[in-house]
Picture 1 (cartoon, rainbow, N blue to C red):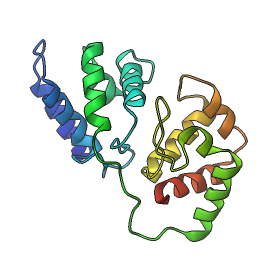
Picture 2 (picture 1 turned 30 degrees about the vertical axis):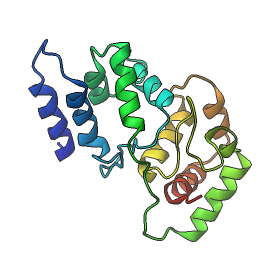
Picture 3 (picture 1 turned 135 degrees about the vertical axis):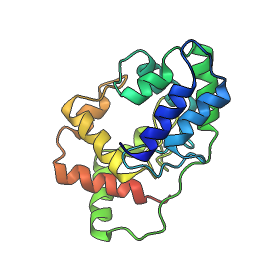
Length: 190
């Protein structure tokens, strides 16, 4: 089991059955995987810093209600009240937004991804700087592996949203296109 999963399991187990956690304790559980400063270093785990508050609240709601399955997230959100969801969302969205990695990207893949982002109008919903707004997530910079998995899940229909736009946007994209788009998003600098 990866170290970060052991850490989360330990945090969850430490909460005790029926014992309420404070928002600080819940936030600590979140940041154990998603990064203490909102930038994840764990493979497949998204960075949450700078995400719009409404988007975070909606995702926490989806996890709590079992509409977006993820064992760790479902367990973490179990029993949260709507007020706790809102407070946690505000705290998470107040973390600093991730920065694009210093490491140079593959320029050809980056350019192909930039063309795809323009052709599929990513900026029309996610904003000019791809930082999201309201219920639309910040998508750049984001972990490349997480973005690729998310895009693939939208394409396959496994990932839900509150509208049909993402499945329609990614439907015509090949696996190589999805990989190039994820690479672009991970290295995007406005």
